[in-house]
Amino acid sequence: MLTGSCLCGGVKYEPHGSLIQPLNCHCSMCRKAQGSAFRSRARISSNDFKLTIGVKLITFFESSPGNHRGFCKVCGSPVFTKFDQYPDFLGLPLGLLNDDPGIKPEFHVFVGSKAPWYEIAELLPQYNVLPPSSF
Image (cartoon, rainbow, N blue to C red; front, side, top):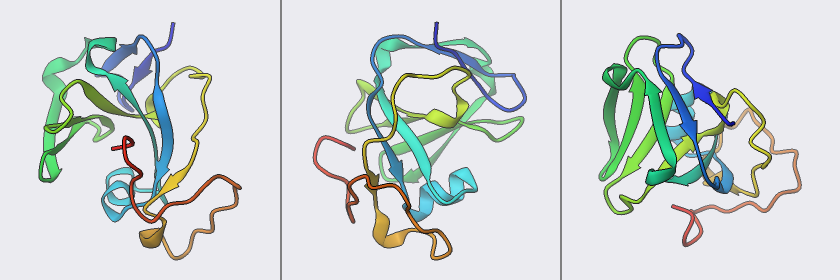
């Protein structure tokens, strides 16, 4: 069974079902939220995501209109993102998974705003915007 947790262990979850369209996002918001060169994430159906511990520890920040990033308020780990425009899906950072999800990022997005000190080495497709249906 696939599980995930935040840095302090106060929030734990189980994603069931398929992780959809894994990608690496290089936008400035993802870089700041992750404290890294990019954010690796996938989509998951809201119905396929179960918080098992720590519901009360999650706080939200609207990083852009309609995008609500959920963080553990104890350790700051980014747990998931809710989208007003797509309420049936969540954005799930792959870095919080405790197990191998069996998928790898398929492409890079917002490469025009990537960190200037980071060079993308993979031969994955690169986009300056988010391709349709990738939200």
